Length: 116
Figure 1 (tube, rainbow, N blue to C red):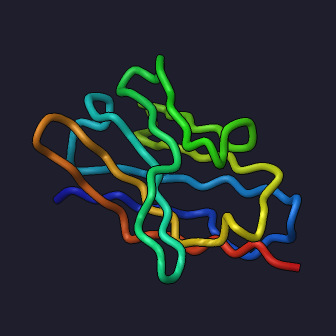
Figure 2 (figure 1 turned 60 degrees about the vertical axis):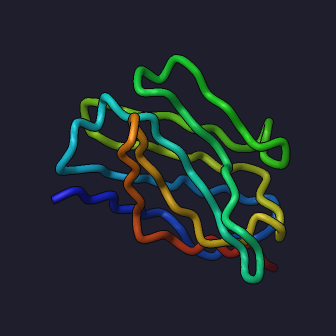
């Protein structure tokens, strides 16, 4: 069955870095656009970054531009989110999403907490 498994979350001090990973299985990973979303307590889920199937185009939320980098390795069926210069307002549950035409799959989420 389709699975997206996120890892790499945790507690980090402001200014620190984390790298999230999302490994997909049960579908043709290389044919899907991959995205990272986040949801903070009391807020709606928001798009953080997106990368097309070939990796040739990326998009970012204004709030993370210049600090976060999305990438993918289609051989390993894994998407990544490198997060640098983290701020307390980046605290949220981060979800990865795979999307193609009418199909959309979600991971279970990984908690990122930025606090001193």
